[in-house]
Length: 519
Image (cartoon, rainbow, N blue to C red; front, side, top):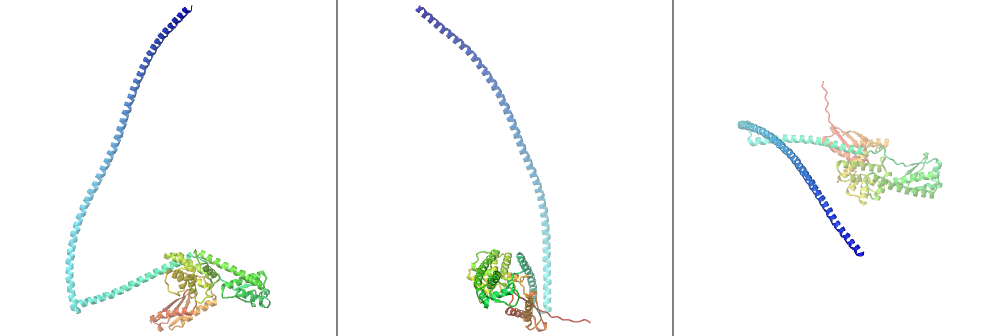
């Protein structure tokens, strides 16, 4: 049984293998036939796509060729237009050249005609010159025969006449030019001064100092004097001034040559009167405190003046001296304000002339520095100021400006002249200085009296507030030559005998009149 089962099993396995083999062969055949058909389809599709792409490529190539052809045609058209335009321009230039050539030929013919006419005129002029030379020679011979002079003598006489005429003409031209230049210089100088004064618009009323102190009652005067005068003696000793107490109601006068001490005494006395405690110890304390305040104010005023003039780097001693000028007056004009004004005017003039404005302002600000100590030192304030400025290291221009601003020294640089001009402008402008009526009348009378002392003087008039003296000479007692000497002598006499700010112009006039009456 087992053997038969094994055989059956083998047979079944063999049959399965054979069946499987045939099935595989059958499916393989079916697969191969299907793949062949798919391959054919793929080949057909590829051929169709290749034909389509070929046609598209041909169409694209044709389109590109058409576009390239159109572009080339446009470029060719542009080139043809440019060539046409150039040809047109060349034709136009050719026409222009042809016209110019025709014009040149016409001008050449005109020049030839002109040259021919000019040659004829030159020949005619030569002929006339020859005839004129013959006539002149004939006339010269005739003149020599009539005058009795030879050629050399006649030439010398003619040259002498021509020289005299030329000298007269030259003198006339020189006088005309001098007059014109003088007028121009006067106008230019006037404009410069006016511009400088207008650029510095200072107040016309100058500050003044006073030497009086108001007291509330006569009882206060007694307290100021003190028992047996001990208070007034203590005050005069501490302040270095003299107190004048008289019957004048409500006023005590302070007398001192030093304006700083006088100002210190005024303030100290005012504080004592306000405080009410008046005795020697309190007097010394108040005076000492006031002196410190005044000293601080002096330095402050000097710095303010320096800053106002836009200057820096001044020595502290010079600042102190500048501050002291705040308490000094000249003809009621505050000297410190005058110095600042001179600084600005000098700087403006320097700007007009193209000079150093800063240096000009420095010269103007320090020109009157000597007035701060002229009551303590011997000499004029100009010399004292120059010595001080030199001692404290100021430049040569500043020193010379201070020394020569009143024409006391030789002028060696333009800044001295600037300061002189600015000083005169500041002192002479309206309202700068005030004088009492009596002093004014006395000063005018003194100027006229000095001028009348000279021989030949007929009338004298002091004008422009004493800035000018006009002298009328008697024609019978003087000549034009002596008039100049009289003018100089009067100016020198005024310089020696009269004290005045700025300068005084002396004008001498001599006039001869002849009067006849027709009947």
